[in-house]
Image 1 (cartoon, protein in one colour):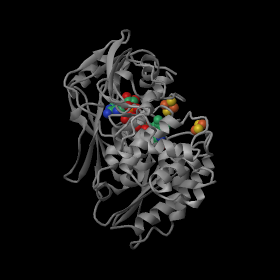
Image 2 (cartoon, each protein chain N blue to C red; image 1 turned 90 degrees about the vertical axis):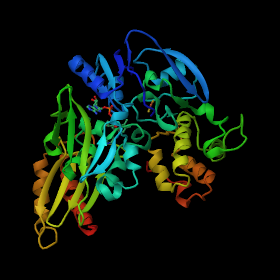
Image 3 (cartoon, protein in one colour; image 1 turned 30 degrees about the horizontal axis):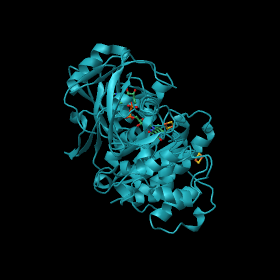
Image 4 (tube, helix red, strand yellow; image 1 turned 30 degrees about the vertical axis):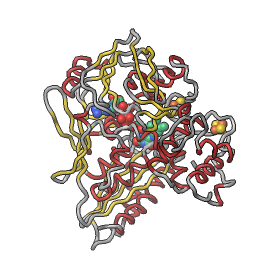
Length: 189
Length: 278
Ligand SMILES: Cc1cc2nc3c(=O)[nH]c(=O)nc-3n(C[C@@H](O)[C@H](O)[C@H](O)COP(=O)(O)OP(=O)(O)OC[C@H]3O[C@@H](n4cnc5c(N)ncnc54)[C@H](O)[C@@H]3O)c2cc1C
Ligand code: FES
Ligand code: FES
């Protein structure tokens, strides 16, 4: 996280200007200190791609990238995000960096395509968070083993897929043949 | 599930943070990674009037090994410590235990010092600190003091840290040549809090076992080696330790199951630590 030069005090009962770089474009809104980043994105900026489930860090639905790093938006205050780069699922399809390099303006990334091909989602509530975690994680660990991948996925609850399709999609997009067990095996995450 | 209101302070220096904390008294709280505090705020289990954000203080982003200690500052995240290439040589127990702290996404934000300050009885970082004989460096506006890990934790979410102090850093002794270390834990799912966590250290003269998740704080016990081997009466010793820890029944496990884990996993990690001495 970048250092800040001067102290900032923000009063509880006032709304404060918060400016973030959302998927590459500067966006400004107002926030009381207690406003969560997840609510700031959805209610103040109208960016509804980020989902909200549990609001205590367990389900992973709200995961976004803050200065590139996958984190819980529901455990972040909007005022803490001031001046930072926030990447959400809406930005993935236009992204020209990271593991999905290429001229894919307006198109889904290879990872998103793989999710579709492998039925890695059903209702889709968990998907935005999982994609944001993966877009950070695969940058750091480009060819995870199934065990490593399932360990990372333990930070996300998916109540539809049993995780098998998600594992298959990631194995596919990282150029690895899914291990036989991944096909129908119940998740141990 | 929204926090009650509070003023938010992003101090420019540690001195500013400490002054605000002293002035704020019991109504002020520091926030580091927020991975324990934000859930408590969202559920309104705590309602501070002032939140003091330590997470962007460059002064606290210190991570260095010197004169026998690995020192971890209050702004260093669990991921940052885990990514230190030399960690497995310096404090092998941390390299084994930290991947068990929550999930990839929470470790990206949660700090090592925040976990120690929070003092959950089943948390891995406090357990490693106690197991290795580490220290906590506390600081308020007037002074700095160092407390041994064994004296720091008093009970669930309770430590000797005064309300006007922050944990400035925690210090782990660098692993001694010829020592061996092992860690295992049992939880409902990977990333959940431990039902029992066991950290073993074996050096030239003694075998030590630290247990988390059973007693109200991480607890350490040591036994002398018998001719380079584990003590012959280890099973009885582990049984006595398991009973002394005095775990309770809760929604995750019975006290009896926890005692069983201490006896069995305790032995396993001690054997592993003995066999991986370097
Ligand atoms: C889904 C989930 C799973 C988790 N699983 C685990 C797990 O398995 N094991 C585990 O150990 N933890 C787990 N945690 C908690 C862990 O992620 C936290 O990071 C850690 O407990 C606290 O560190 P923090 O930096 O986030 O502190 P914060 O949440 O910011 O603060 C926690 C408390 O410590 C105080 N504090 C923080 N830093 C300081 C300081 N430097 N000086 C004085 N006081 C301070 C705060 O005032 C607050 O009272 C989990 C959290 C989540 C959300
Ligand atoms: S809504 Fe943030 S983790 Fe569930
Ligand atoms: S697709 Fe429905 S929760 Fe994952």
